[in-house]
Length: 284
Ligand code: HBI
Ligand code: FE
View 1 (spheres, rainbow, N blue to C red):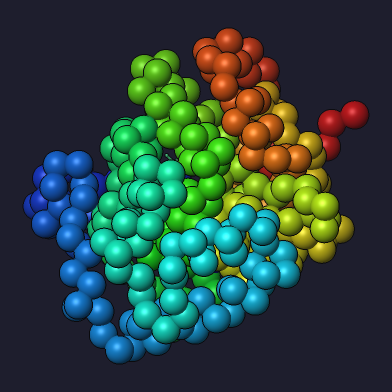
View 2 (tube, rainbow, N blue to C red):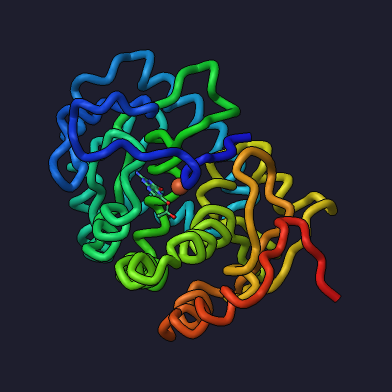
């Protein structure tokens, strides 16, 4: 279960001297937190860890993942045996939707993360997890970021949603609403479900980069599954270290784009006046 603490970890200040509690090497990061991938430096063991994760998750994704995921992986030429070289993936990704991958040391401050998304650049961590972390990971590694997030950026509608999401960052930050905006990311981009003609499927990266949560999110009777409701999403707290108790379901990526197109200020105001809901809350 690869639960992610992606929004609860203190992020290092820009200065390289800080000893970040994160595991990436931030010492050579540029002012926008990007680094070089140095693809030739990956060891045979790191490529083998990629192969183990990729082979296992491909099966899961074929069965429980939205069809756009597999289509994206194929479109981007991802291979089972080697960690992707971001430069070669970027040629295909840019041709598909104008997006590209930027290499980062790991988690980066919200405002930089949003700025990259607004510029159609998705930050992907350059390090890959240890063998001992195959099932549980504290921070997003290369596998979570690439396998979970990048394939959908080849889908034009989802890519437009991601750019609009990033563009909403500065205004949210100016109004202290980043935690509310983060919930939208969490309950869609990380843990979203989608209805397809073949049945319910997962499209969230946090689900699809975890073998156990992928099956749970689709098959378990335990969690609540609600249709996408932006106000409810922004009211609902989430757990970062366990399977989700509530999943939100969309009928299409177009629906996700359309329902998040209006300006969020009025929703921020409304949600702020309501009490927060626990992740497992069930309303009448
Ligand atoms: N940084 N590299 C990286 N990857 C993320 O997914 C990420 C991040 N910083 C902040 C963040 N996610 C979340 O707080 C988003 O809600 C902004
Ligand atoms: Fe993620």
